[in-house]
Length: 126
Image (cartoon, rainbow, N blue to C red; front, top):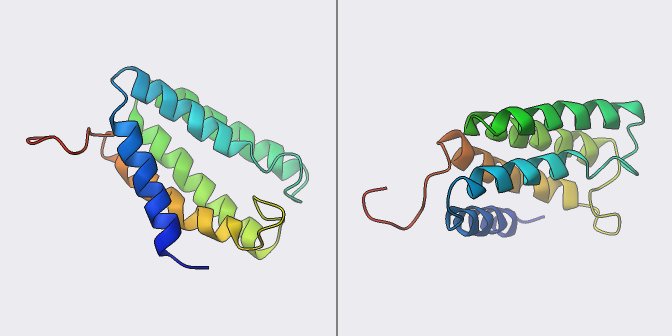
């Protein structure tokens, strides 16, 4: 598993999202982290913990509608869950063994941007 690919995916996601005008950017980001929180739910191999994790990230997504930092926390939680799945559970993409590891590398890129308040990128003075 390379590091460059997952980091580039995170950067492309962040750059793309930075073009979404507010308040849509925050809403879209909340939907994305909520969806990420549920990706392992039907086959991650962690039983009831999958539901508990989904509930926790959904809570972060809801709180993130008012404060971007909660969305960053949600992505960081997902990073941890990706590591758990890489070590012990099923991968996020069933036929790609290192996909959870790649996700764990990508997610902090997104989280850092959100923890900074999801600034618009590429414009002078921002």
